[in-house]
Image (cartoon, rainbow, N blue to C red; front, side, top):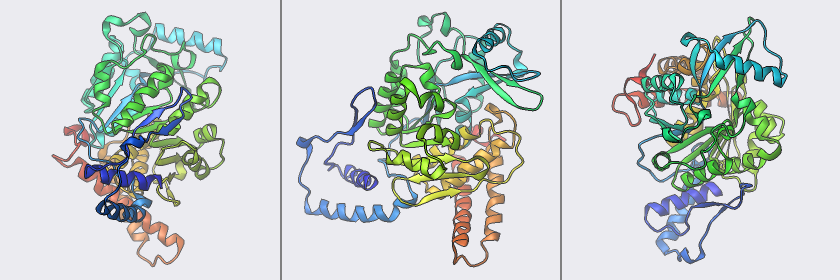
Length: 467
């Protein structure tokens, strides 16, 4: 019913007769959220409004199973703003992965930072994977984060500009930088001969927050947060910035109509225990979309199985989440929607895998696009799985994430294959599932083509066509 209520509020807002403000307020630093209703603002419904309420409730129940909540159209400069986690990945070949013992890894980080490999080993990392994938899908993308005034920061800026990402708005002015902020965050990707890899960076060792002195959003960042349809963040942001600052910014952006998408990522285990757990709880409740791997979902929810974990997020007493998604790698993905008791699953496309770095970030970019443009769940899931699969076909992430051309090719092949498989009767459960997959793949293909056509809304020049 929460979805229906939101749908009805939206329709009444369009007519200018909204009865209930839709704002949320943060009750405490533990992140409990509540719906704020001002009794003085309630007005009696007219006969016409009551009829509209009944009609819209029926419409909501009919359309809810496969579409995200309808939101008032909002003219924005950006489709999505990405918060934080801007870093440079530097790939280092090692004879064997280093010990997990903290003191030895700290020493290794100091040595690598003092004498990093040359540019041939550099690749943009962190949330740039999401940004590049989103831009290649035809979305308008920008970021709020920190890049030092060094060659690493300039490298990231140059790559993002070439990929069609609009800008990186700084969290702190150059005149306010202390020594710790004058270098862009580096993440060393240690690769062993057997292709096994691990990471070594300040994200692991602190001191936290990694961006000291940043305690509030500067005006340019606030302006961007009020001019976007969605905000994407992952768990690494809470290594960089104070949690109360982040939650306050997200809350105000949501009150302004932005969709919040949260992927806890590899920091799921850190966020799920100790003093950071209240922050995680608040963010789960605040987010419209939550995306996790099955392993991360177990750490966050304590639930075994993708469906149980996804549903747990929706069932939280203060949750406002609409789509809860668990990625299952080669098994595909599962989505639970607040609007429907149905569970949506999408099998993975069969591709030759290079590696899986950046697949989840690319997947999330497609999910955000589908949600903010009110595409239905089957087509959004099909698009997300195709984008993730296209990324898996390459090696590394950053500029090696899915290209639009590769995604179009995969969806075309999947559409042809699923159409052929669906030629027979679909009077059983398997046939119905195949029918849904055929529809999802075909619809996803059309969605992407529409997004990339010249002059389409949110298409961004040649970057969207990058091969």
